[in-house]
Amino acid sequence: MMKNFVFLYAGDNRNCAFDRVFSGKSAFERSLKWASDIEDCAGIIVLASNSNEVRVKTEIEREGVENVKIIAKENWNCSDLIGEMAKEMAASKTVNAIYSSADRPFLDSKLTKEILECHEKYIAEYTFADGYPYGFAPEVIHSGTLNILSSLINEKYKEEGKAEISNECIFNLLKKDINSFEVEAVLAPKDYRMLRFDFSCGTKRNALACKRLYDKALEKNASFDAVSFSDLAEESADVQQTLPAF
Image (cartoon, rainbow, N blue to C red; front, side, top):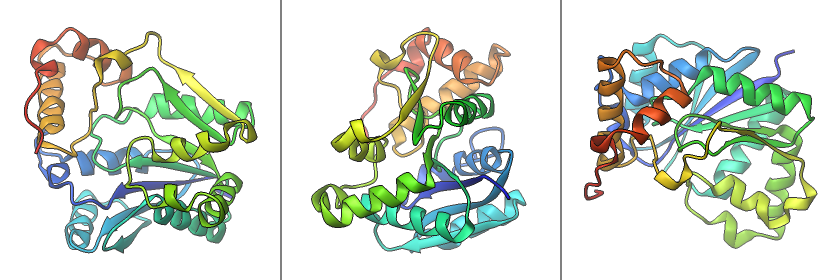
């Protein structure tokens, strides 16, 4: 029986995620390719919005990735996200939910494998990468933990359940009762968090930073991994340049 199920969140009309600016690929396509390469994976679920469902389907067909299911809603919040993940995990009888936003062009397969190995080794309920900029790694959540979180949202933390989907919405819910969960982290070799990077394509500002970083990595023939990208971004003034967010 397969252990893993991948969830990609594309439910907030992040149009920059579909721009083909990474050697002819979009951030969504690159995220989808990353998901399809995960070992022991039963399938991929893309959580879309009603307004971008057709575009998501077109991108999936263009990339040629099989065993992908689309779940579309008009609007998503934390409660919807946790509830759908818990339901799909129960139906598939898989153990680990691997979750990421679908607008991340630099998701690192090697780092993902390291997170999964840590999750299994320490029998964790939730495992993440700590110290890296956003955009390089998924979160891994045990199916039983999703059931617990779903119950907590419905019974105890209803207001938290209404929160918008964000980089930290799942972890913020866990923190409400953090001592009740076995949480593990894969640490970056150095702490990049002070740079406040978010290598996703949810805004034009972040998408531009991603494009500049990608082009610089090609120019310098850098390795396409989280550490190399983080080091390159740290030393690149044009990647760090701030622009108005739209």
